[in-house]
Amino acid sequence: MSLDTPTPVRPELVEGLPCSSVEEKNRASTGSARTVKTDWTREEIAVLFDRPFLDLVFEAAAVHRAHHPRNSVQLSTLLSIKTGGCVEDCGYCSQSAHHETGLKATKLMDVRAVLQAAAQAKDNGSSRFCMGAAWRSPKERDMPAIVAMVKGVREMGLETCMTLGMLSESQAAQLAEAGLDYYNHNIDTSPENYANVITTRTFQERIDTLEHVRSAGINVCSGGIVGMGETRADRIGFLHALATMAHPDSVPINALVPVKGTVLGDMLADTPMAKIDEIEFVRTVAVARILMPLSMVRLSAGRESMSDSTQALCFLAGANSIFTGDKLLTTGNAGDDKDAALFAKLGIAAMRAEIAQAVAAE
Ligand code: SAM
Ligand code: DTB
Ligand code: SF4
Image (cartoon, rainbow, N blue to C red; front, side, top):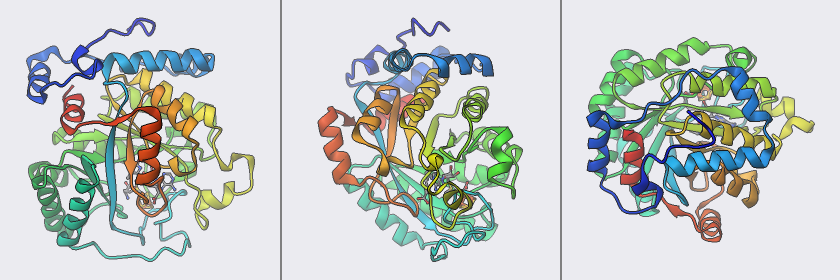
């Protein structure tokens, strides 16, 4: 693929004109879906990162506009359905039982309360409801409630997303059967840096879960975190891992939210690495967009401490999805009022659910 001349593949979306999701899905199922490059080398990715910043962002914006509606950002709402007390030792996470963060652990929420929160998210204009649990993996005894949550949220006309830790093949099949639209499971960082961040499960176990999700026919959401004190080479390795698998439908790029009491929050506090350089963050978003032109790139954790200008650069560079609301899972988020003001300032509109679905069908 020539990066200088991205092929305009979906003019109806690019121009922002209404289109039918049925037509889009048919186009995908009749075999006209685009193939994407999955043989990226680390050297090619390093060259992209090294480009003059303005050239890189310009390039990423061109790729973005060739494949996605412009000025349009998809909104998702997160709910922590089971908080804290997690057995895993992810160095960034407020919910790990290995960390003393003052977070109160809770049991799995009951289905009715989850559906109430979903109804509220729908009223607030969200098109996707993402439910997260602080688990290594779901227990079989939890599956009936999880399935009921997926079915109930879907019946409200919202897209569903879950992030529950590792899944077996049979759990992925149960979630697919319930109608789950997306499963989020992040690779988090480069294979080389992974063991510096998490020791209780391997990079390969993450890849295995993604494979189970994909094989079950659920859309894959996978990305990671930058600003954990990793090197540029790690950011290259992280994006290389994502861009050389079947590209995830959605790629969350989180900026570390440093939480006191976590290994990384405490280690980075009061150091120059406490916050990733914003230009380097935008570069990461831009490179992700170029490498995975059809994926939704999600500007995820870290927006609360990001300036409007940096977020605007991220949208220009191809980010087209965010989490809305005052809270992510346990940490703060920008909040609906701030986001509404930002969108108004930038002339950005919330992406309609059917357009987001059409993108996913590619
Ligand atoms: N327990 C499940 C798992 O780890 O797969 C699901 C929830 S977990 C909180 C989802 C993702 O959130 C993590 O993989 C990580 O990428 C991101 N995350 C967690 N804490 C974060 C933090 N403090 N800053 C940025 N991203 C974070
Ligand atoms: C993802 O990549 N980011 C979201 C979502 N997937 C589940 C979670 C961010 C969590 C940030 C820390 C917290 O609020 O606990
Ligand atoms: Fe547990 Fe997920 Fe947090 Fe890791 S990121 S400690 S698996 S909740």
